[in-house]
Length: 213
Length: 213
DNA sequence: TTTTGAAAGTGGTCTGACCACTAATCTTTC
DNA sequence: GAAAGATTAGTGGTCAGACCACTTTCAAAA
Image (cartoon, rainbow over all chains, first blue to last red):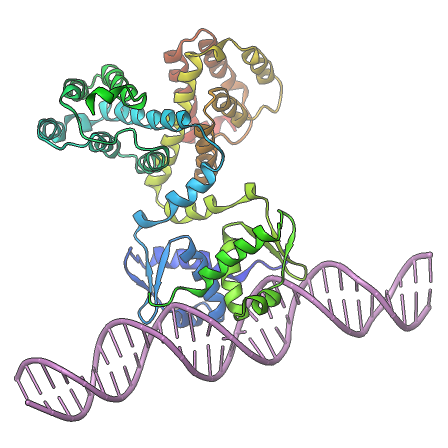
């Protein structure tokens, strides 16, 4: 390509502009006509760049109002990545195993960090005893507290695709196991926490929890 | 939105057209002017749809020649989202940490399986002594041998996004560490293998390997 | 036969013009 | 003065036409 595509430059320049001017999600970005003048290109070129970003879910356009930056949590990352990562007939085992990889890594990180001393564990214990405590909340809390947002995103994606093994409420029979996990985390005993966690999740994954449901 | 976006319809209609006419990767699709006439819309509308598909890597346009369907395996969604989502340093750390999560999990699985007895380790050791052995080959071999294709795929994508920490050749100084890892794997000593692996990779990630390069 | 170059066709870009819609402003009315 | 309505400016959505840069094709010239 002797001359690089103009609209690709626009995409990069807009990314820089968003960063420099500290435009936050939900904020309005300059109008197409303004951008065209500022970047010294035709409006149609601006539009080609914008439509690409819109299809990616990075921006949102509203006729009569303007163009807005999308909340990063609403990006189509999940759906689009899914079409790439999970395009082949992936066995569910791989999905679950990969989820487990991220979950145990999260526990490992938490046990090795100050997060193990947070009061959140005590409150989790209390919520556990209450009714209507969803299994997924427990695991998600672990993923969030590990502090790795990317890992969390991947975990969400896998959960969405692979069918959520943590669907449903925590049954009374599960509580002792979960409390053991919490205790081990507070004691920064990663080995025990992971062992108990795997024991709990493997029952859920193998569907041996019919008795609980 | 009272009226749905036109260019989104174009995207769907083109997908249908591609399927109906059995257009395969590498084939040429009708010109912009033809599409505009056939779908009864302006050429600029066609272009907005095409640019979206091009940015996703679904089609490839060559000035003077035409527009062509691309190999599905060459999609570039990943790099794009990366430039928007993974801009700050924190996320870059997350990428490396997440890569490490998958790598150590791979070692763990290998040590616990029959893969630890494969002759591939001996051949790896030999290639290690030869010249021009790329670091990435070593890690990729681990990922492949773990047998989790999904984890492997995620690892590939992360490597692509976050800048490859395993770029470059293995330096003579690194060989003892790598051989230790191999030996530990063959002895199914996951703990030692992971510890040595983390020692090796952390040096690479922190850029403390300037001495080696 | 080989070479050349003109022509046709393609994507790349710009301009200007409408349309549909929204939100702010102004005007009218009570 | 306040509320309701009408106006207006600004926005994205779309179209038509015009060039440009480039590639391929093919007929004319050597």
